[in-house]
Image (cartoon, rainbow, N blue to C red; front, side):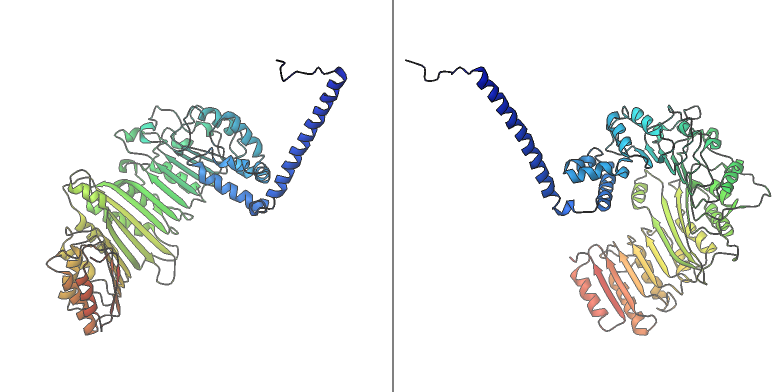
Length: 552
């Protein structure tokens, strides 16, 4: 049987016609593809996302980049794949490519090209960054642009292998952080070797554990507005090259005429080096915030060497103190240095908060960690002057000693509580004596608000004080009382919750106080019976109550 399919021979002339026809079809297909692409672009330009002005869309892209840089730095540039308009905006936005992710050397070169002449940022050390094997080659490409770099923010990597033969003329922010295990010792490498030619425009310098750089080689310039230096103390601290003498430190600070924020942790000389003799205190006129974390002796010696006429926030952290008198001395020298050219002393303590670290308190009970207490004081000038704040963290190195009551005594002896408006006590329990609290409360004639948080024993002491004061001697101006995270069911210093309600009701009936707002915030074991007690007791009184949290 004959095959049903027989190939027909094609002549040469006909073959040429087919090739020509195929060429025509191919050409037409390309034209249709271009026409389809053009129609798709035209269609996309009518969507709301493509009608956004270039400036707004560029701002969105930059914000998106900043959002993803810390977690998935390779994701943010996917915006260039959405449509033609977005790609044109993304590739043309120089600011979008200034914060270069560490993906590959080729991508770094591409980003540097697209960033044009915009200021650059070198940021590394976020969880989404890849291993350090890519860091050296990528960082070297970026650091070559010494006139464009504006921000260098590095974590867990060093640049001691890098040398630059030109100053970083545009650099404004330099942050460098190493974990204590990576911090170089005295003979270690210099992590700031790359910036040895200087950074005349530097405004913020933050170094954590980067202790291999001698003080004399730090890039300190007159343009500096924020200086943060932190190091973990070690046994051989006296030999660390990063710790300046008091003379070096004060001389450097005096030259930083624009410095507004100063944070020093582990950078103060030991008291044996702090022999300032008859030298007058250095006045840091531009400084607005001072943060010190060191031994009590070192902090006190430093405060005695300076004056802070315009500082509005002082945060002190005294490590391992054993002599409570040092806390009192710190307050004395702070009052002396916290002077204004036109005023002799800081006046009018308006807010006072004492807080014990809850986790450390638990660990202290278990015998694993020392205690730490925070005092937060807010001041205001009587004639409408600047408001100022002192935050003092005090930690005891000896778990066997409990200085809480004597610490409070140090504050009450050096600070004037007569104009105090707000008092907050957080997690300070029964270890404070009754006489200590009584000595404090009797001064608070102008106090308006009190907050007790996590003090299951103290609110009972407070109830006793109100009762023994014949309802009027204590806190005549009190207008708001808050109990936060308290166990209402428990007895407190022989008192029950009903006793506290009864005392407040009696004060209201006798007219010894202004209208009082009584708040219960996230308290434990607050039953319906307690709510009914409040309703009965305050039904026709000047006391109102407010409950936040579950009622059992």
